[in-house]
Image (cartoon, rainbow, N blue to C red):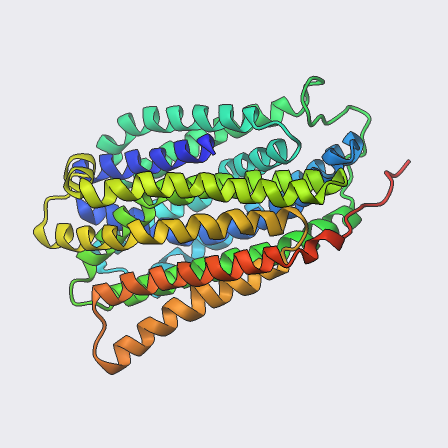
Length: 434
Protein backbone atom coordinates (compact mmCIF):
# COMPACT_ATOMS: atom_id res chain seq x y z
CA UNK A 1 0.00 0.00 0.00
CA UNK A 2 2.83 2.40 0.84
CA UNK A 3 4.28 1.89 -2.62
CA UNK A 4 1.00 3.03 -4.17
CA UNK A 5 0.80 6.08 -1.90
CA UNK A 6 4.29 6.99 -3.08
CA UNK A 7 3.20 6.64 -6.71
CA UNK A 8 0.23 8.91 -6.04
CA UNK A 9 2.48 11.52 -4.42
CA UNK A 10 4.79 11.35 -7.43
CA UNK A 11 1.90 12.22 -9.73
CA UNK A 12 0.89 15.10 -7.48
CA UNK A 13 4.44 16.47 -7.55
CA UNK A 14 4.50 16.25 -11.36
CA UNK A 15 1.22 18.14 -11.67
CA UNK A 16 2.29 20.71 -9.09
CA UNK A 17 5.52 21.50 -10.94
CA UNK A 18 3.80 21.67 -14.32
CA UNK A 19 1.08 23.87 -12.82
CA UNK A 20 3.68 26.33 -11.54
CA UNK A 21 5.87 26.39 -14.67
CA UNK A 22 3.30 25.90 -17.46
CA UNK A 23 -0.13 26.66 -15.97
CA UNK A 24 -3.40 24.79 -15.68
CA UNK A 25 -3.34 24.01 -19.42
CA UNK A 26 -0.31 21.81 -18.77
CA UNK A 27 -2.16 20.07 -15.95
CA UNK A 28 -5.09 19.39 -18.25
CA UNK A 29 -2.71 18.03 -20.90
CA UNK A 30 -1.10 15.59 -18.47
CA UNK A 31 -4.48 14.48 -17.14
CA UNK A 32 -5.86 13.83 -20.63
CA UNK A 33 -2.67 12.06 -21.77
CA UNK A 34 -2.47 9.82 -18.72
CA UNK A 35 -6.06 8.75 -19.22
CA UNK A 36 -5.03 7.44 -22.65
CA UNK A 37 -1.70 5.92 -21.58
CA UNK A 38 -3.36 4.05 -18.74
CA UNK A 39 -5.56 2.22 -21.26
CA UNK A 40 -2.40 0.70 -22.78
CA UNK A 41 -0.76 0.05 -19.42
CA UNK A 42 -3.86 -1.64 -18.07
CA UNK A 43 -4.14 -3.93 -21.08
CA UNK A 44 -0.58 -5.21 -20.72
CA UNK A 45 -0.96 -5.26 -16.95
CA UNK A 46 -3.80 -7.73 -17.42
CA UNK A 47 -1.10 -10.30 -17.97
CA UNK A 48 0.30 -9.39 -14.60
CA UNK A 49 -3.06 -10.16 -12.97
CA UNK A 50 -3.00 -13.60 -14.60
CA UNK A 51 0.60 -13.95 -13.47
CA UNK A 52 -0.31 -12.92 -9.90
CA UNK A 53 -3.12 -15.48 -9.73
CA UNK A 54 -0.74 -18.27 -10.68
CA UNK A 55 2.22 -17.02 -8.63
CA UNK A 56 0.16 -16.57 -5.44
CA UNK A 57 -1.32 -20.05 -5.73
CA UNK A 58 2.05 -21.70 -6.38
CA UNK A 59 3.76 -19.69 -3.64
CA UNK A 60 1.05 -20.72 -1.19
CA UNK A 61 1.50 -24.37 -2.26
CA UNK A 62 5.33 -24.04 -1.89
CA UNK A 63 6.16 -24.66 -5.58
CA UNK A 64 8.95 -22.14 -6.36
CA UNK A 65 9.88 -23.70 -9.72
CA UNK A 66 6.41 -22.98 -11.04
CA UNK A 67 6.61 -19.43 -9.69
CA UNK A 68 9.84 -18.80 -11.63
CA UNK A 69 8.47 -20.26 -14.85
CA UNK A 70 5.29 -18.19 -14.73
CA UNK A 71 7.14 -14.92 -14.10
CA UNK A 72 9.62 -15.57 -16.92
CA UNK A 73 6.83 -16.21 -19.44
CA UNK A 74 5.04 -13.06 -18.26
CA UNK A 75 8.27 -11.13 -18.81
CA UNK A 76 8.63 -12.36 -22.40
CA UNK A 77 5.01 -11.65 -23.26
CA UNK A 78 4.94 -8.18 -21.70
CA UNK A 79 8.15 -7.20 -23.48
CA UNK A 80 6.74 -8.09 -26.90
CA UNK A 81 3.43 -6.35 -26.29
CA UNK A 82 5.13 -3.21 -24.95
CA UNK A 83 7.14 -2.82 -28.15
CA UNK A 84 4.11 -3.38 -30.37
CA UNK A 85 1.75 -1.07 -28.50
CA UNK A 86 4.36 1.68 -28.19
CA UNK A 87 4.63 1.89 -32.00
CA UNK A 88 0.85 1.87 -32.47
CA UNK A 89 0.33 4.47 -29.74
CA UNK A 90 2.89 6.88 -31.19
CA UNK A 91 1.20 6.89 -34.59
CA UNK A 92 -2.34 7.11 -33.25
CA UNK A 93 -1.67 9.80 -30.59
CA UNK A 94 -3.22 12.75 -32.52
CA UNK A 95 -6.40 10.81 -33.21
CA UNK A 96 -6.66 9.69 -29.58
CA UNK A 97 -6.49 13.30 -28.37
CA UNK A 98 -9.25 14.18 -30.85
CA UNK A 99 -11.43 11.39 -29.44
CA UNK A 100 -11.22 12.83 -25.90
CA UNK A 101 -12.24 16.24 -27.27
CA UNK A 102 -9.11 18.00 -25.99
CA UNK A 103 -9.17 21.72 -26.65
CA UNK A 104 -6.53 23.06 -29.11
CA UNK A 105 -4.34 24.56 -26.36
CA UNK A 106 -4.49 21.34 -24.33
CA UNK A 107 -3.78 19.24 -27.43
CA UNK A 108 -0.63 21.26 -28.21
CA UNK A 109 0.76 20.48 -24.77
CA UNK A 110 -0.49 16.88 -24.66
CA UNK A 111 0.73 15.53 -28.03
CA UNK A 112 4.51 15.55 -27.34
CA UNK A 113 3.89 14.29 -23.80
CA UNK A 114 1.71 11.43 -25.03
CA UNK A 115 4.10 10.37 -27.80
CA UNK A 116 7.08 10.39 -25.44
CA UNK A 117 5.20 8.25 -22.93
CA UNK A 118 4.34 5.68 -25.61
CA UNK A 119 7.95 5.46 -26.79
CA UNK A 120 9.26 5.00 -23.27
CA UNK A 121 6.53 2.67 -22.01
CA UNK A 122 8.86 -0.34 -21.62
CA UNK A 123 10.21 0.81 -18.25
CA UNK A 124 6.77 1.29 -16.74
CA UNK A 125 5.59 -2.08 -18.03
CA UNK A 126 8.53 -3.86 -16.42
CA UNK A 127 8.07 -1.90 -13.20
CA UNK A 128 4.46 -3.01 -12.85
CA UNK A 129 5.29 -6.59 -13.82
CA UNK A 130 8.11 -6.87 -11.31
CA UNK A 131 6.07 -5.26 -8.53
CA UNK A 132 3.17 -7.64 -9.11
CA UNK A 133 5.42 -10.68 -9.30
CA UNK A 134 7.36 -10.00 -6.09
CA UNK A 135 4.20 -9.05 -4.20
CA UNK A 136 2.31 -12.18 -5.28
CA UNK A 137 5.31 -14.33 -4.31
CA UNK A 138 5.23 -12.93 -0.77
CA UNK A 139 7.95 -10.25 -1.03
CA UNK A 140 6.33 -6.80 -0.59
CA UNK A 141 9.60 -5.09 0.33
CA UNK A 142 11.19 -5.26 -3.11
CA UNK A 143 8.21 -3.47 -4.79
CA UNK A 144 8.41 -0.84 -2.05
CA UNK A 145 12.11 -0.26 -2.74
CA UNK A 146 11.46 -0.07 -6.47
CA UNK A 147 8.61 2.40 -5.92
CA UNK A 148 10.69 4.58 -3.60
CA UNK A 149 13.59 4.63 -6.05
CA UNK A 150 11.34 5.49 -8.98
CA UNK A 151 9.64 8.32 -7.09
CA UNK A 152 12.91 9.88 -5.94
CA UNK A 153 14.44 9.60 -9.41
CA UNK A 154 11.34 10.99 -11.11
CA UNK A 155 11.22 14.01 -8.83
CA UNK A 156 14.95 14.60 -9.31
CA UNK A 157 14.71 14.35 -13.10
CA UNK A 158 11.59 16.53 -13.25
CA UNK A 159 13.14 19.30 -11.17
CA UNK A 160 15.69 19.62 -13.95
CA UNK A 161 13.61 18.74 -17.01
CA UNK A 162 10.23 20.48 -16.49
CA UNK A 163 11.68 24.03 -16.31
CA UNK A 164 13.62 23.30 -19.53
CA UNK A 165 11.12 21.31 -21.61
CA UNK A 166 7.78 22.22 -20.01
CA UNK A 167 5.01 19.61 -19.96
CA UNK A 168 6.94 17.01 -21.97
CA UNK A 169 9.73 17.24 -19.39
CA UNK A 170 7.46 15.32 -16.98
CA UNK A 171 7.32 12.49 -19.53
CA UNK A 172 11.10 12.47 -19.92
CA UNK A 173 11.54 12.23 -16.15
CA UNK A 174 9.08 9.34 -15.83
CA UNK A 175 10.69 7.45 -18.71
CA UNK A 176 14.21 7.85 -17.35
CA UNK A 177 13.33 6.82 -13.80
CA UNK A 178 11.14 3.85 -14.75
CA UNK A 179 13.76 2.49 -17.16
CA UNK A 180 16.51 2.66 -14.56
CA UNK A 181 14.35 1.04 -11.86
CA UNK A 182 13.13 -1.68 -14.24
CA UNK A 183 16.72 -2.50 -15.20
CA UNK A 184 17.63 -2.95 -11.55
CA UNK A 185 14.54 -5.09 -10.95
CA UNK A 186 15.41 -7.39 -13.87
CA UNK A 187 18.92 -7.76 -12.47
CA UNK A 188 17.36 -8.75 -9.12
CA UNK A 189 15.74 -11.74 -10.84
CA UNK A 190 19.20 -13.18 -11.47
CA UNK A 191 20.12 -13.15 -7.77
CA UNK A 192 19.91 -16.56 -6.02
CA UNK A 193 18.63 -14.93 -2.79
CA UNK A 194 15.58 -13.48 -4.56
CA UNK A 195 12.15 -15.02 -3.92
CA UNK A 196 11.86 -15.17 -7.74
CA UNK A 197 14.99 -16.42 -9.44
CA UNK A 198 15.71 -16.99 -13.14
CA UNK A 199 18.18 -19.87 -12.92
CA UNK A 200 20.89 -20.36 -15.53
CA UNK A 201 19.62 -23.73 -16.66
CA UNK A 202 15.93 -22.86 -16.93
CA UNK A 203 14.14 -23.13 -20.27
CA UNK A 204 14.32 -19.71 -22.01
CA UNK A 205 11.89 -20.55 -24.81
CA UNK A 206 8.32 -19.24 -24.86
CA UNK A 207 5.95 -21.70 -23.21
CA UNK A 208 2.62 -21.13 -24.92
CA UNK A 209 0.74 -23.27 -22.41
CA UNK A 210 1.72 -20.89 -19.61
CA UNK A 211 1.14 -17.84 -21.80
CA UNK A 212 -2.34 -19.20 -22.53
CA UNK A 213 -2.96 -19.47 -18.79
CA UNK A 214 -1.77 -15.90 -18.33
CA UNK A 215 -4.32 -14.72 -20.86
CA UNK A 216 -7.06 -16.99 -19.50
CA UNK A 217 -6.87 -15.42 -16.05
CA UNK A 218 -5.55 -12.02 -17.09
CA UNK A 219 -7.49 -11.12 -20.23
CA UNK A 220 -10.80 -10.49 -18.41
CA UNK A 221 -8.92 -8.06 -16.16
CA UNK A 222 -7.38 -6.44 -19.23
CA UNK A 223 -10.75 -6.00 -20.87
CA UNK A 224 -12.07 -4.71 -17.55
CA UNK A 225 -9.28 -2.15 -17.33
CA UNK A 226 -9.73 -1.07 -20.94
CA UNK A 227 -13.48 -0.73 -20.49
CA UNK A 228 -12.97 1.39 -17.36
CA UNK A 229 -10.40 3.63 -18.99
CA UNK A 230 -12.33 3.92 -22.24
CA UNK A 231 -15.17 5.00 -19.97
CA UNK A 232 -12.81 7.56 -18.48
CA UNK A 233 -11.81 8.76 -21.94
CA UNK A 234 -15.45 9.12 -22.97
CA UNK A 235 -16.15 10.94 -19.70
CA UNK A 236 -13.42 13.40 -20.71
CA UNK A 237 -15.32 13.83 -23.95
CA UNK A 238 -18.40 14.86 -21.98
CA UNK A 239 -16.23 17.25 -19.95
CA UNK A 240 -14.83 18.63 -23.21
CA UNK A 241 -18.36 19.39 -24.41
CA UNK A 242 -18.99 21.81 -21.52
CA UNK A 243 -18.93 25.51 -22.15
CA UNK A 244 -16.00 25.82 -19.70
CA UNK A 245 -14.22 22.73 -21.06
CA UNK A 246 -10.59 23.72 -20.44
CA UNK A 247 -11.28 24.75 -16.84
CA UNK A 248 -13.32 21.60 -16.21
CA UNK A 249 -10.61 19.37 -17.71
CA UNK A 250 -8.02 21.05 -15.48
CA UNK A 251 -10.23 20.54 -12.40
CA UNK A 252 -10.78 16.89 -13.32
CA UNK A 253 -7.07 16.33 -13.98
CA UNK A 254 -5.97 17.74 -10.62
CA UNK A 255 -8.82 16.62 -8.36
CA UNK A 256 -9.72 13.23 -9.80
CA UNK A 257 -6.51 12.12 -11.51
CA UNK A 258 -4.12 13.37 -8.82
CA UNK A 259 -5.68 14.22 -5.45
CA UNK A 260 -8.20 11.37 -5.59
CA UNK A 261 -5.28 9.08 -6.46
CA UNK A 262 -4.25 9.31 -2.80
CA UNK A 263 -7.32 7.12 -2.21
CA UNK A 264 -7.33 5.10 -5.42
CA UNK A 265 -3.60 4.29 -5.39
CA UNK A 266 -3.84 3.28 -1.75
CA UNK A 267 -6.87 1.16 -2.55
CA UNK A 268 -5.05 -0.36 -5.52
CA UNK A 269 -2.29 -1.38 -3.13
CA UNK A 270 -4.90 -2.94 -0.85
CA UNK A 271 -6.38 -4.68 -3.89
CA UNK A 272 -2.98 -6.24 -4.61
CA UNK A 273 -2.58 -7.22 -0.96
CA UNK A 274 -6.07 -8.72 -0.86
CA UNK A 275 -5.35 -10.66 -4.05
CA UNK A 276 -2.10 -12.04 -2.63
CA UNK A 277 -3.66 -12.99 0.71
CA UNK A 278 -6.65 -14.62 -0.94
CA UNK A 279 -4.59 -16.47 -3.55
CA UNK A 280 -1.91 -17.75 -1.20
CA UNK A 281 -4.39 -18.87 1.46
CA UNK A 282 -6.54 -20.60 -1.12
CA UNK A 283 -3.41 -22.32 -2.47
CA UNK A 284 -2.54 -23.41 1.06
CA UNK A 285 -6.06 -24.74 1.65
CA UNK A 286 -7.29 -21.94 3.99
CA UNK A 287 -10.28 -20.28 2.26
CA UNK A 288 -11.66 -18.86 5.53
CA UNK A 289 -8.46 -16.87 6.04
CA UNK A 290 -8.75 -15.65 2.45
CA UNK A 291 -12.22 -14.29 3.23
CA UNK A 292 -11.09 -12.62 6.46
CA UNK A 293 -8.03 -11.03 4.82
CA UNK A 294 -10.10 -9.26 2.17
CA UNK A 295 -12.45 -7.89 4.82
CA UNK A 296 -9.51 -6.48 6.80
CA UNK A 297 -8.11 -4.82 3.66
CA UNK A 298 -11.45 -3.10 3.12
CA UNK A 299 -11.49 -1.76 6.68
CA UNK A 300 -8.01 -0.28 6.26
CA UNK A 301 -9.16 1.39 3.06
CA UNK A 302 -12.12 2.96 4.85
CA UNK A 303 -9.75 4.61 7.33
CA UNK A 304 -7.60 6.04 4.55
CA UNK A 305 -10.65 7.30 2.64
CA UNK A 306 -11.97 9.04 5.77
CA UNK A 307 -8.68 10.81 6.46
CA UNK A 308 -8.08 11.99 2.90
CA UNK A 309 -11.75 12.87 2.35
CA UNK A 310 -11.56 15.15 5.39
CA UNK A 311 -8.72 17.07 3.72
CA UNK A 312 -10.81 17.51 0.58
CA UNK A 313 -13.58 19.09 2.67
CA UNK A 314 -11.55 21.12 5.17
CA UNK A 315 -8.58 22.52 3.20
CA UNK A 316 -9.43 22.45 -0.53
CA UNK A 317 -7.90 25.87 -1.24
CA UNK A 318 -4.55 24.84 0.25
CA UNK A 319 -4.48 21.68 -1.87
CA UNK A 320 -5.42 23.52 -5.05
CA UNK A 321 -3.56 26.82 -4.83
CA UNK A 322 -0.46 26.06 -2.78
CA UNK A 323 0.28 22.58 -4.15
CA UNK A 324 -0.87 23.00 -7.74
CA UNK A 325 -0.66 26.75 -8.34
CA UNK A 326 -4.31 26.94 -9.42
CA UNK A 327 -5.44 30.57 -9.19
CA UNK A 328 -8.06 30.88 -11.92
CA UNK A 329 -11.41 31.55 -10.15
CA UNK A 330 -13.43 29.35 -12.50
CA UNK A 331 -11.05 26.39 -12.13
CA UNK A 332 -10.98 26.79 -8.36
CA UNK A 333 -14.76 26.84 -8.09
CA UNK A 334 -15.16 23.69 -10.20
CA UNK A 335 -12.38 21.95 -8.26
CA UNK A 336 -13.87 22.70 -4.84
CA UNK A 337 -17.19 21.19 -5.86
CA UNK A 338 -15.54 18.10 -7.37
CA UNK A 339 -13.55 17.48 -4.17
CA UNK A 340 -16.77 17.44 -2.15
CA UNK A 341 -18.18 14.69 -4.36
CA UNK A 342 -14.92 12.74 -4.23
CA UNK A 343 -14.79 12.89 -0.42
CA UNK A 344 -17.91 10.68 -0.47
CA UNK A 345 -16.86 8.55 -3.43
CA UNK A 346 -13.63 7.46 -1.72
CA UNK A 347 -15.43 5.13 0.71
CA UNK A 348 -17.06 3.20 -2.11
CA UNK A 349 -14.07 2.90 -4.42
CA UNK A 350 -11.84 1.54 -1.65
CA UNK A 351 -14.42 -1.13 -0.79
CA UNK A 352 -14.85 -1.98 -4.46
CA UNK A 353 -11.11 -2.38 -5.08
CA UNK A 354 -10.46 -4.44 -1.95
CA UNK A 355 -13.13 -6.97 -2.85
CA UNK A 356 -12.10 -6.89 -6.51
CA UNK A 357 -8.63 -7.96 -5.34
CA UNK A 358 -10.17 -10.83 -3.42
CA UNK A 359 -12.05 -12.02 -6.49
CA UNK A 360 -9.04 -11.70 -8.82
CA UNK A 361 -6.61 -13.31 -6.39
CA UNK A 362 -8.74 -16.43 -6.14
CA UNK A 363 -9.00 -16.70 -9.92
CA UNK A 364 -12.43 -15.14 -10.48
CA UNK A 365 -11.37 -12.46 -12.97
CA UNK A 366 -14.60 -12.51 -15.01
CA UNK A 367 -16.95 -11.13 -12.35
CA UNK A 368 -14.97 -7.88 -11.88
CA UNK A 369 -15.06 -7.45 -15.68
CA UNK A 370 -18.86 -7.51 -15.81
CA UNK A 371 -19.16 -5.37 -12.69
CA UNK A 372 -16.78 -2.73 -14.07
CA UNK A 373 -18.56 -2.49 -17.43
CA UNK A 374 -21.87 -1.85 -15.66
CA UNK A 375 -20.61 0.48 -12.94
CA UNK A 376 -17.80 2.42 -14.68
CA UNK A 377 -19.15 2.62 -18.23
CA UNK A 378 -22.90 2.04 -18.49
CA UNK A 379 -23.97 3.89 -15.34
CA UNK A 380 -21.87 7.11 -15.43
CA UNK A 381 -21.87 7.57 -19.22
CA UNK A 382 -25.55 6.70 -19.41
CA UNK A 383 -26.39 9.32 -16.80
CA UNK A 384 -24.29 11.95 -18.57
CA UNK A 385 -25.98 11.17 -21.88
CA UNK A 386 -29.44 11.47 -20.32
CA UNK A 387 -28.61 14.79 -18.65
CA UNK A 388 -27.11 16.15 -21.86
CA UNK A 389 -30.13 15.14 -23.93
CA UNK A 390 -32.81 16.35 -21.52
CA UNK A 391 -31.69 19.60 -19.92
CA UNK A 392 -28.09 20.29 -20.89
CA UNK A 393 -25.03 18.85 -19.16
CA UNK A 394 -23.51 20.65 -16.18
CA UNK A 395 -20.23 19.90 -14.33
CA UNK A 396 -22.15 18.78 -11.23
CA UNK A 397 -23.97 16.18 -13.34
CA UNK A 398 -20.64 14.62 -14.31
CA UNK A 399 -19.33 14.69 -10.75
CA UNK A 400 -22.51 13.00 -9.47
CA UNK A 401 -22.31 10.36 -12.20
CA UNK A 402 -18.82 9.43 -11.00
CA UNK A 403 -20.05 8.92 -7.43
CA UNK A 404 -23.04 6.80 -8.48
CA UNK A 405 -20.74 4.62 -10.58
CA UNK A 406 -18.50 3.97 -7.59
CA UNK A 407 -21.47 3.15 -5.36
CA UNK A 408 -22.68 0.63 -7.93
CA UNK A 409 -19.24 -0.98 -8.23
CA UNK A 410 -18.82 -1.37 -4.47
CA UNK A 411 -22.26 -2.90 -4.01
CA UNK A 412 -21.82 -5.46 -6.78
CA UNK A 413 -18.21 -6.38 -5.83
CA UNK A 414 -18.98 -7.02 -2.16
CA UNK A 415 -22.08 -9.02 -3.03
CA UNK A 416 -20.24 -11.22 -5.53
CA UNK A 417 -17.32 -11.97 -3.20
CA UNK A 418 -19.62 -12.92 -0.33
CA UNK A 419 -21.24 -15.57 -2.52
CA UNK A 420 -17.87 -17.42 -2.17
CA UNK A 421 -18.08 -19.26 -5.47
CA UNK A 422 -14.32 -18.66 -5.79
CA UNK A 423 -13.62 -21.47 -3.31
CA UNK A 424 -13.84 -24.10 -6.08
CA UNK A 425 -11.65 -22.44 -8.78
CA UNK A 426 -8.74 -24.71 -9.83
CA UNK A 427 -5.31 -23.32 -10.89
CA UNK A 428 -2.31 -25.30 -12.27
CA UNK A 429 0.22 -25.56 -15.15
CA UNK A 430 1.95 -28.47 -16.86
CA UNK A 431 5.32 -29.82 -15.62
CA UNK A 432 8.45 -28.15 -16.97
CA UNK A 433 9.87 -29.41 -20.27
CA UNK A 434 13.02 -31.48 -20.01
